[in-house]
Length: 327
Image 1: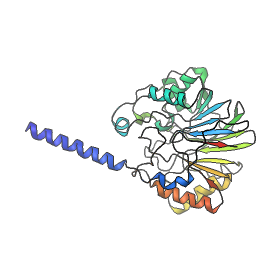
Image 2 (image 1 turned 90 degrees about the horizontal axis):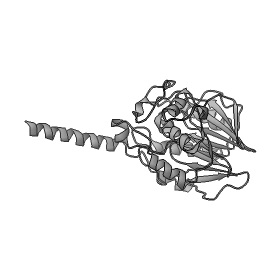
Image 3 (image 1 turned 180 degrees about the vertical axis):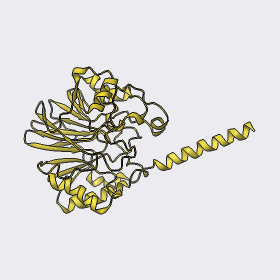
Image 4 (image 1 turned 90 degrees about the vertical axis):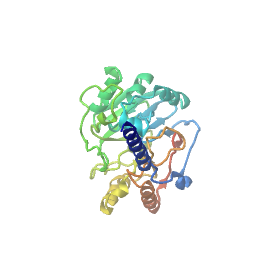
């Protein structure tokens, strides 16, 4: 009897492993779009901005003097760790990234929302670098859980400009993607959140976009694929970093309005996609597309590339740790 129970348990484990493997297989091949890849390893010259991508929507903006970080997610725990254990920041990996990519002039960290794939490492990075952590009530409680000092925590003041070096950052209220499986839009993290912790306690806590100006350059960063009708009508951007996954899960009318409210309104010359990679895989320069259970990533890319081409908008893709110089 004990032997039969043991065999049955092993079968259940094996079935579970196979199920997780199938469900997390990439929904497409990012290398199909290699002609859109770009990477510039040079340093930014006077007036230029170097934007570097670290997966999901973690972006480093660097003008050679000042660095800003959008989100903070470098640890990228495996799916088994994230689903079945309490997780904590990988301090060795964060130190490696900070050192290897010269993140040593960081002045501000701006978090789009407080799901773990956006906020998870932001508190630790703030402590390590001395950069001020800007965010919602939820994000600041993640920072407090990491031991960030109160004078390094700044609550968002939406639609108010913040100047850091030659960057001006405006936090713009936004919406999480309509595919939020956790159904926790607006749910706040009400108390300091120390690690280790379950990924499930990192509730959304409100979503935000960022309108960033630097001299004459205008950048808009929108990690979550959604829109508020008319919210961006008064803004124009040269470059749009835009989350596009799951858009083709919606109906045609929604997709067209998504494009209109973001791209048509902002009129960018260049669009760079965000949040397309499977964040259960480690950070590398060979990130893979999101898993099949979340979206059809190739379908999302094909739709968006077709629309951008039709409107004569340049479309570029940053692989993990790759950069582009915005002149």
